[in-house]
Image (cartoon, rainbow, N blue to C red; front, side):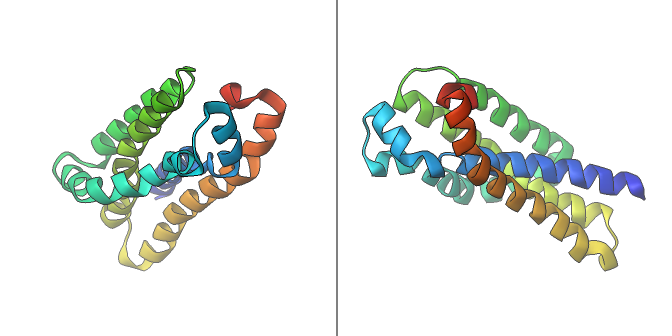
Length: 163
């Protein structure tokens, strides 16, 4: 019984990380604009790509989760997110950063949708609401952490080291 809650919390942490990687550029828009010499709209694309890609890939991610399982799908999403997050470390200009953000966003639906499938498969109906709440809470904690910590980390370490 405890095992399923531990696994859910780990999945929720991964979903939170996906949200952290999504929204951590929000408090840095002016810095991105000045560093890369792009417009506010282009800087905003670093965040807007996530909901767009999620909208396009949510159903295919759900199908893959149903066919291959959430462990495979969350693993695939996590690998994509990690590989493209590492690409953010390369200082190759705005468009390379945009490609990295797009790659991370491709992994997001596999991770986020996997949490819902885990709850559906592993938790009895009377624990569904609480388990879904824990999974969702992970995403909101990731967003809040990104918004609160990213500016301080950039001030302390610089943009490249923060990424």
